[in-house]
Picture 1 (cartoon, rainbow, N blue to C red):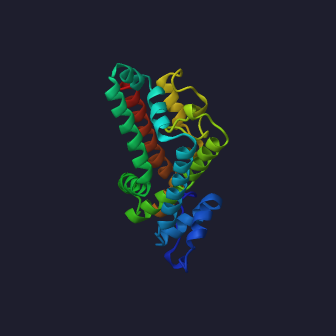
Picture 2: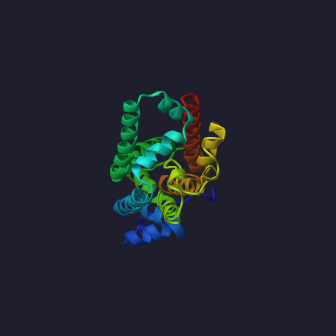
Picture 3: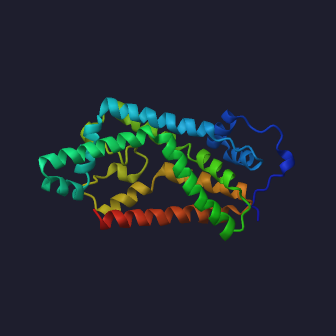
Length: 253
């Protein structure tokens, strides 16, 4: 029971500032999550930061690669898509490239909405799991806030991806699906490597693992459960989604 973290409500005080909560995620994450547990559930700053650095990456891609090239790369790096493109008529090829290009650009533009929707859905699943399966006492709003703060390390991926672009990476080699060198997949050829092996290599990502660890710590604190229980809940869901994603991609690509 030594890993159960319980903070009395009387210790709330004035709480941490937004800047302190963000900074502590990288230096002393438990302090941020304990502040959330005390009822300080404001999440606007991590949303702004996550969106801002995604837009920085968006600008880097626009300047150094171009969205037409991004669409071409997606098709070329996926053997099945490349085969379909070869069999398509010139008009169909143009339509496919345009759809791919505009859908990716649109997803970047809609970053804040996508972050909020994804966080809302995923937090709901984690909230139900930690409370119903592991006997937690977390409120949905606390899990939602923990999720956004735990996601802050992903801004490092955006910065690294942007740095790689401005360091002179060839536009033809840019992979929008794996743009930062934070996993083994970034150093493998997506065309020549076994599909399942490549996808697994991209999922074993240092920043992703960091984020999952933070999410586990935060969930344990706001739910009042053992950290081991939170790790099982968080990494269990992650493993399920990874296996489903890899299986789906291998079966239909």
